[in-house]
Image 1 (cartoon, rainbow, N blue to C red):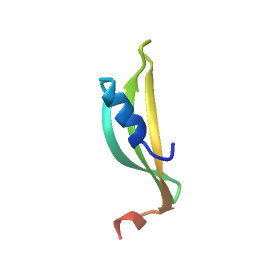
Image 2: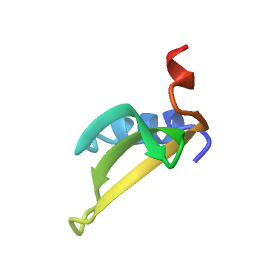
Image 3: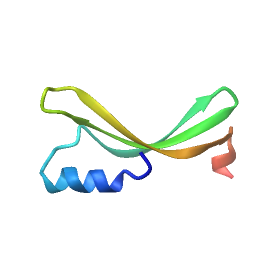
Image 4: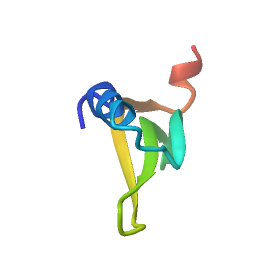
Length: 65
């Protein structure tokens, strides 16, 4: 998903509670890091859904510079 903000706004406008508020995470993949902005919500049947917005990839430590 290119941008989480529109779906977050829609969920909040309809009073849907989030299971996990939006957060930014970086995951190590071999010698790279991949970043995502993500949140979790449960659907009416109780399934947990994760929505992610990619932030890019780069060499380890490159986001700290």
